[in-house]
Every structure is written in C-alpha cells, then in structure tokens.
Image (tube, rainbow, N blue to C red; front, top):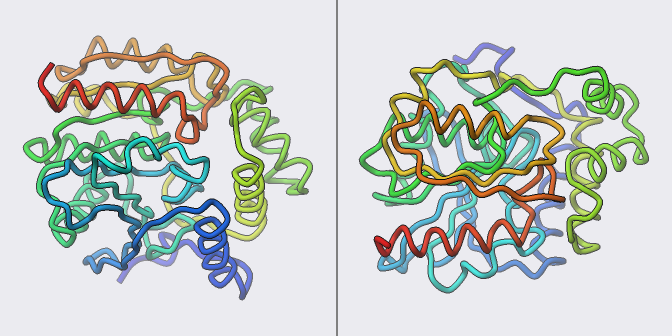
Length: 305
C-alpha cells in the first residue's frame, strides 16, 4: 500500500467531476480530436490521449506535462496541430498530478516514474519513440532517457526542471506564493499571464480561459502528495547518451534556462542542440513557435540529416 502522504487529492467533493468536465470542455471548445483510454499499471491507472495510435508506420511522439498541469495543456492552444498528419501523438496525464490518472505518486529521486512510464508504453505497444517533457515533464524525460535509452529515439526538453534549482529570489517567491496564499482569480491570472507565460505570447481566448480556469480551481482545491522537482546530481545527466534537444526561454522567470543549457552542454554525452526563444516564458508547451521548431528538428533528426 502507498503511504497516505504520497496520495494527492481534491479537497472538494466535486473535484473529480470538475476535472472531467474541464477535459471535456477543452476538447469540445478547442475542437481537439483525440481518442482516450485508461491504461492499467502497477502504479495505478494512467489516462492517455492519443492520435493516429494504430498507424504504426508513423513515429510516436510522447508528451509529458509539467507540475500542476495535465496532458491537454500541450494542445489547448493548438500547438501540436502541425504534427497531426505525420506522427502518432500521445499526451500522458502524470500520476499524482491534478489529472485523470491515479493520484498516487512514487518518490521522485528514484527511477520509479520511469518504471511507471515503461509500463504505460508497453501497454500502448509503443516500442521506440520521441519523448518530450515540459518543466516537471522534462525531469521525467531525463528519468526515461536513463532507464530505457534503447527505446528513446530522441529526448526533447522544454524549459525543464531538474537541471537547475527553481528561482528563490524574493520577487520570484512572492509571485509564486501570492496566488497560493490568496487564490483569487485576479492573483492567479496575474501569476499565470505575467509570470508563467509572457504577456506577448500569442494565446487564443479559449486557451486563456481554460488555462486560468484550471489553475484557479487546482490552486484552491488540490492537495499534493507528490514530491516536487529537485536539482539532479551530475551522474543523472552524465549517463544520458540518447540524442537530446533543448527548447528554452531566455525570459523564463521560474528557472534560469541559460544555466540549464550550460550544464547540459558540459555534462550530457547525448546533447545535440539548444534552441532559445524570447517572449514566451516558462509555459513553452503552449507556444506554436516553439513547436514549429520542434517539428523541423524532429523531421531532420528522424531522417538522419
């Protein structure tokens, strides 16, 4: 049995139904066409959205979301639409997060997240794949790359956590804690659209609506039992030989991504290239610009250019 402290939960009785409605509304409002299924693992059930799942000739792209988000964040701004025709796409709800997956979570400083994902990939019949992670999902991408290098065609890190500490200066701490301590719509909106993503980032009105609705409800009503990201030791980077690409923002206010780049370049044997962006912020997974660069990079990588 899992310790109670490792089980996340909603503090409200209608939390699960609210989350199901939010997922359904995002799919309907944003016109997203995905199939979904719940995959059973020894770590609990895992909710997966996928596209072109049975078209085995297409390369699988796996997307892992950040902390306090879920799989649909990757596409609620239609960021992935240029990938629809050429790839199999998998959006995975991470266990322990406010998502449709199981709320239990393993210790982050072990390889158990990678063992969980290995079971998910096996259940879906995904043998070799490109794995991409945003923020906390980037840390999980590192875990996957260490645990099953023979299956990873490429690892892509979008403003990852784990390579550097989260900023702890007084301004950053104030901006981060204010919406948690005083979770009004105004405070969450300011945090989200001025601190997590830059005001200049092109977002549809529907994307803004659903991002704010999710974050406001979750900040107020979700209690985490999962571990928070940590700065990994050198050996967790030095062992990664799979081809690795970094998609980073100079203006990330949560993590200094220039330092992420420097550490990856100096330690990671599989490091290939870094692409820097401006006027996006930490929430790079909702950026169409970043995903266009990702698409071009993966086309060249998979074709062996």
